[in-house]
Length: 177
Image 1 (cartoon, rainbow, N blue to C red):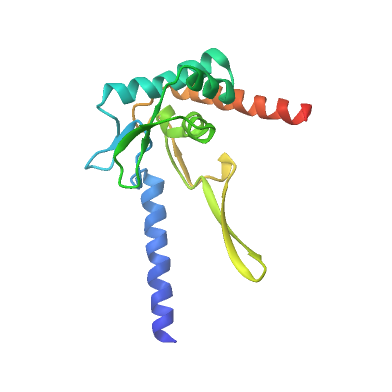
Image 2 (image 1 turned 90 degrees about the vertical axis):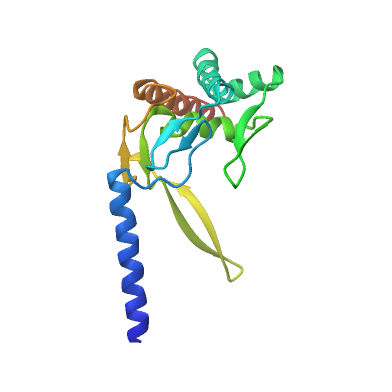
């Protein structure tokens, strides 16, 4: 039982060290599409101009059209592809999905911010078997949010405006249905 206690203590210290690094903005796991992770653990825009232009186009079209769905439809109607990452981190091009466009428009990284602790994992039991599900936490419960941590595709103010527009669209669609 002493070994179990020591293992639990080491695990707890490891988690606390991870959280401390995240609070400093130094814990960078994976770079979102349109960014690359530097050796000193910072985000920089992808040097590929085509990738930069595609990501910027998503934000320009959302500003012009006002909804995630209309932005997606615009890309589909014009037969445009968006960059995506493989599990190994290489960039490839593919047909956009609602999830990809929504993730791009709602990720604080594109507004130049560092964020950590945005989701939590919940375990529920279904027919006696544990099922894990990730759930997005409200912003006030995130562990860390550091605006202007790196260069964004839009300013932090524009990013906040986009979040309000998406929220208003969601509320409006809930009221209709």
